[in-house]
Amino acid sequence: MQADAVDGLIGQMAEAIKSRLAERGISDPVMIGIHTGGAWLAERLHRLLEIREPLGTLDIAFYRDDFTRIGMNPVVRPSHLPFTVDDRHIILVDDVLQTGRTIRAALNEIFDYGRPASVLLATLVERSGRELPIEPDVVGISPDLRPEDHITLTGPDPLELVISGARDAGEKRAKP
Image 1 (tube, rainbow, N blue to C red):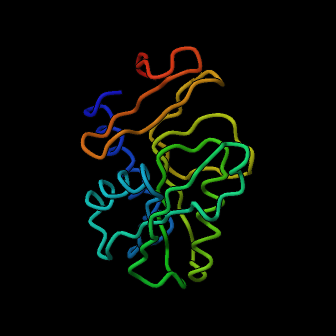
Image 2 (cartoon, rainbow, N blue to C red):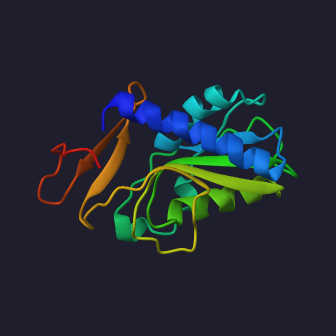
């Protein structure tokens, strides 16, 4: 998916987040993006939503519970939360939600910093394969993908979605 289409999805997500915040009576949220793609996405949303507090970022590498299964050798970046978490309304942003394990790890880390009043989850891509009962509040797109397909947000500028499968690794396919 080309950059202009991704930018359109981000604009739609910003409007949906505004609506959700208004429904909940939230006027002063903070935003946290999960490294790497979620942080890129959060930068754009943060700017569109004109959030007063600086953007926070999380690196959940040490909080993952599936290293052995996914063969992850973490490159650890520091988490940066330039605000207090206690009693704050947080917009948590990630690029792709599939199993739910990244979000679980992010929530664990956030709770190590304090107890938020609420967490609204926004994700650019929601795909099947959930292993944990985690559902996003705002979604950019829910493509119909084969189980062997991988979808990745590339960036940071431009932001594009790339789909590859086990048989066609690295090959771009049509729009999801």
